[in-house]
Image 1 (tube, one colour):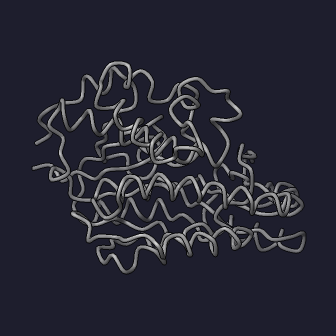
Image 2: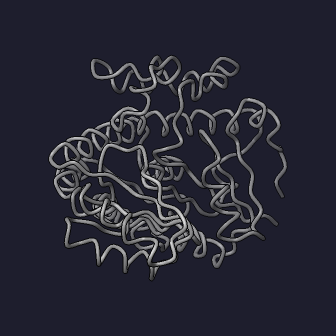
Length: 316
């Protein structure tokens, strides 16, 4: 018997045209984008930007976040209608940063329209916080946790810097002020880091520099009603399953200033019995990370039109 865990992608998975092929082929996917456009009426024509670009708009933090969420849910709508993949087939859900909101919609703990509007505002709040101070994110390829923490500690004399993403063995991301990231790059070779790469993001996500965004987001989350989820959601902040809806607003607000413990989250899901991981949404970032975290874990991506059409109707 398969114990299926759903993995939902976060920022960085976006591209111009995401969701368009599926929407052109399946009316149920198009209906999801139409609901999102209605939820954001007067604010953002999400479907047109996602399908047509331009790239700088699709990549903008306040656009790509709702775009990725809606693309994932549009694909799920097709899998449910055409392949019989309903929520009761899954045992667990998790999402990388933004993807945690998609997990909540899938689990029934957060309404679709509320989620679309929340992640739009989340992106705006994070972008606003980024504009307060030049900042960014730096991937340390080949780094282990101890080395990443040591680099951040040494670079802190040049500005705010923190470990932001614990994605997989050898793939850790630092987040901070540009001066501190410059220092981290200079320091990294002495700690055995073979390569550093600046991420194409607007600011220092998942660091203390996002505190203004966390405060605004907390106020928005306080006005949203969360329901008990149909299945446990593994939190980025704790890497543990959560089912109490009273805990969700605080965890989601803390998430933007806390490290994303993705590697730990995958180990938690495996320990809970997950033996098949399904990633519906743009790109295949999370199934790629899964192979680094646990090469023995089985996975299935549903990203392209061909993959959606070939998705098996029987996963048992």
